[in-house]
Amino acid sequence: MDTQGKTITCQAAIAWGKNSISIEEVQVEPPKTGEVRIKLISSGICGTDDHVLKGELPMKFPLVPGHEGAGIVESIGNGVSSVKPGDKVLTLIIPQCGECSFCLHPKGNFCDKQDVLPCSGLMLDGTSRFSCKGEKIYHSFRVSTFTEYTVVPEIAVAKIDAASPMDKVCLISCGVPTGYGAAVRSAKVTPGSTCVVYGLGGVGSAIVMGCKASGASRIIGVDINEEKFPRARALGVTDCLNPRALQKPVQEVVMEMTGIGVDFAFEAIGHIETMVSAWNSCNNSYGVCVIIGVASPDSKLCLEAIKIITGKTLKGVCLGDYKTRDCIPQIVSDYLQNKINIDPLVTHQLPFKQLHKALELYHAGKTIRCVLLF
Ligand code: PAD
Ligand code: ZN
Image 1 (spheres, rainbow, N blue to C red):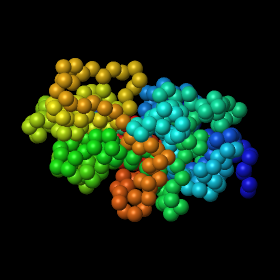
Image 2 (image 1 turned 30 degrees about the vertical axis):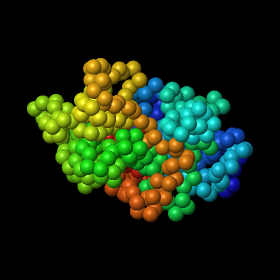
Image 3 (image 1 turned 180 degrees about the vertical axis):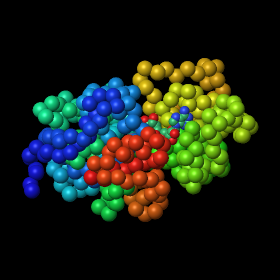
Image 4 (image 1 turned 90 degrees about the vertical axis):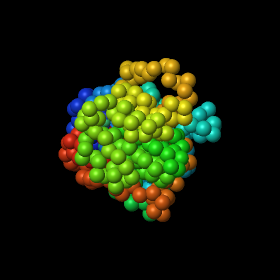
């Protein structure tokens, strides 16, 4: 059936408000100028989606959640030149418009056209492409992926190798570059160094992969869920710590284990307490603390101000500091050439219709990444 230029009726998840999600029949309008309509093949469930579903980020409801998607271009709007129907693509939570001050600068990747901070829930022209029973439904970060079809700005689409296995590469849309890039690009982990990773979920696991690939000699993994430890060890974690099973604060244990503190600390949970622990796990002088976890917008980070003069560095990073459209297709190619292995991160795959079961497995701490298949 030719769907080009027509509204498509399909199944999509709708978050109606905090902790209220259901699969519904929705209408997806055709792409407007500069937009691409994508038939999703797979979508990961990322920690950021969990924040959205719990209402921890200031998003407008009802919305179609999800952002870690892989799919095939169904149709394109006027002026779209970088992709065509049939192309395999990833959705990009951080777009690359190529025109703003941030895209034009060699450093950084936080494109001005992103819809994360703040989230409007609307496309660039200020309207939505989703509706359900006549009601307007918002987008999440302009890349909703818990849906059979989505509309995304062309600047938030990366064309990937035609040989990509579509049931797994969705992780390269967010979790893998976020974690791997935090280690190799943002922290610039050095051979022989010591690292600590707070949070051993999907993003934390990719951080561990990046630390290992950079030649770190010791990688301490911290998580309150000990079920995460065997998989973390298999990826390169040398020591596992459960803060709830320790007699003293975890940063003090890290300090004792390393003598002076680690060279590189990462926070991939999104809590201010663990961000402070990560900062206090770094050595004074040249320690580097990288925050990846997304904290709630009203929370404030409180640090001992005097410590900053020791020379240690605190920084944050989004999507691994990759200029997304330029760099993410290359990570897919690296995966196809066995230079990076994302397979151990895909612990579960379920049909989209079993979204509730997938979310249960996520909340029970059973998954690293559960991939929804359409
Ligand atoms: P995840 O749920 O897969 O992993 C989180 C892990 O943290 C789990 O293993 C938990 O058991 C563990 N955890 C929870 N609380 C604690 C605690 N108090 N102490 C120790 N461990 C704990 O999520 P994820 O890996 O997909 O995402 C992690 C964070 O990274 C989350 O805040 C998400 O929003 C953020 C993120 N940031 C970016 C970015 O570009 N900066 C991209 C993607 C995700
Ligand atoms: Zn994500």
